[in-house]
Length: 111
Length: 113
Image (cartoon, rainbow over all chains, first blue to last red; front, side):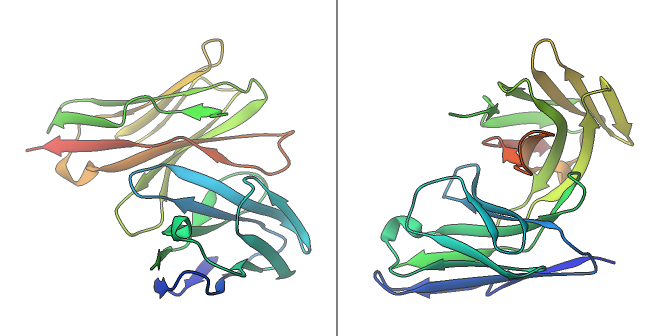
């Protein structure tokens, strides 16, 4: 069966520090991978998605970047965090354009 | 540019009654729609989906209706239970969207005993 792992679950980082969130999927090949953010009291905003290794589509110009170094690994990064980067970050995978399955999320607080 | 909209941020329903959650979309190229349920501090969980070739899909207490001409879909929960209290998101994707999956803003459902 397929599983998705996202870590860490919570993170508190100072303004200006770097960020690296990792997501890995097991049990499937060549999935579509997604990073979403849910700001406080808001919906799920699509940040990045990837349909293959090294292929990244960015939805919102921002302080973040994403990379897909391996087929089932998706990384969200920032060189210098801003206060506005705080939120709940979710990774998801999707196969054959159908249902997307989400990780448990990372609560990021930038202080 | 909000392509998927859930205009009701919250909904309160009595236990045993029907809950109706609505979603509108603007992109006529969307051809697959999904509903998710989300609890705080957790990832969304998939509930039910519908393809644009259908106008209804049913799974137990959950039914999704799609009205393509109105670009509108709805999720019906019958009967509603207190455990259904959560935030519900609709999402949409299209064959020409390059794998993109767009979510609405969510509706918080509260089912009161």
